[in-house]
Image 1 (tube, rainbow over the protein chains, first blue to last red):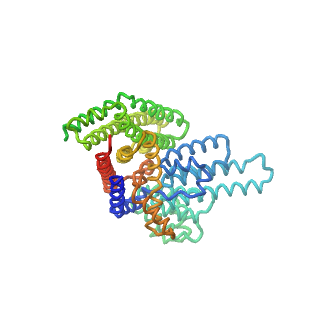
Image 2: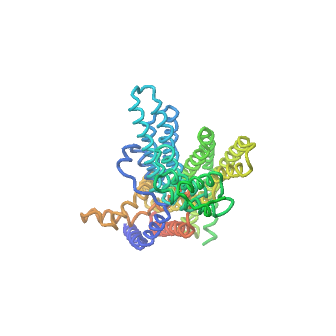
Image 3: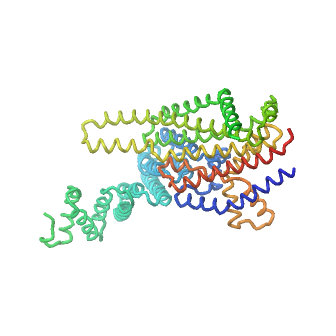
Length: 248
Length: 286
């Protein structure tokens, strides 16, 4: 009995001495985004007791994979509402996986929205369009949450720009999203070009678009794509740029 | 001491291999191959992510289970077939006996982790080659740059070197669990108790981070709950610190410093639990 008590005392003492070390490791892991946020009770209700226990026991990724397959099956049956719920759970379990955010958003903003617009069971066009807008908004919100969880991910930021441009028809917001994407690490050069194109279509930002596209054009042959040249020429006309400053 | 530790470790490893624990590898291979076939209908990014999720998750489950069950069984078994009396009647100190057993189990866990990693890599590589071949056929006629970019996207989504530190952390976590189970078995009265207690510690260890935050962050106000949370925080290891594979699968890299710190912490816990086990076992009546 004495030995066991001494053993517990040793463990408690070493545990206390380890607190600063473990706290530092914990902080370093958090800084490197290797620790996930704590799971909340809302998720517990969504994935059930066993799922919640599995998630707490370090099996978040296999659980997310299983739920993703379930979402895929729901997609094949075109159960959009169920898919939205499953996507929400998967992205909560794996917030640092850009793939889940990207595909969840794409399913909602593109597939679900088109299905809602062409829903034969809904005779009212107003309601069909309303549902379409709601799914596009949902897709956009999923990406915005994904970006909050992965602030350095240029790809997600660019995807947001694409949804804003192609589905929400908001060129001004799309330009901001593309511009932000182009400034993030690992961004390919066409993100900046996309920012310029959307900016050119945003009323009041023509000068800014011209400056951006001209800067890209001045970088050299690689950036002198036909769309860049066409946009610059159009902006030159709009902004009445002196002939001497115009591109050939 | 090494003269007595190494033969015990070797015998333990041989004994465990004879118990056909490697048959679990078949289950693992089935998991990996089965999931890769099933997921072939998804996009290749989804397929590879799922495959990594399932395989690394299965690796973590199997190594943890093996660590707990193999360690919980040896002391009651040696007592039952009286091998322990024969061994300890020779000039073999009790701590050397325990160390030999623990080393044998850790060796098994190492071999097991390596073999599972090989199966995982083979399945991943096979699927990668299939997808690459399909893509080459589909992109025939496109510009070399476009083909190169498409193929690059596929290879980027499959094996990445960051998976290796993640697998190493899975191994050290299982070694920690083995050492912790050894500690429980030194005072446990039955194998069942050891397994149940180790499973409980496993769950507590994963929830421990929350308890520690509550204790350090002074969230609780009642003194008795603060003491309880403090005991939990001090007594049990924070196993969440060893759950890094989720983010590695998502593409995150484990910085070398963090990897070494985490691995070092795991080794420290293995040694600590072994020392405490040896201390308790040296006074146990056999």
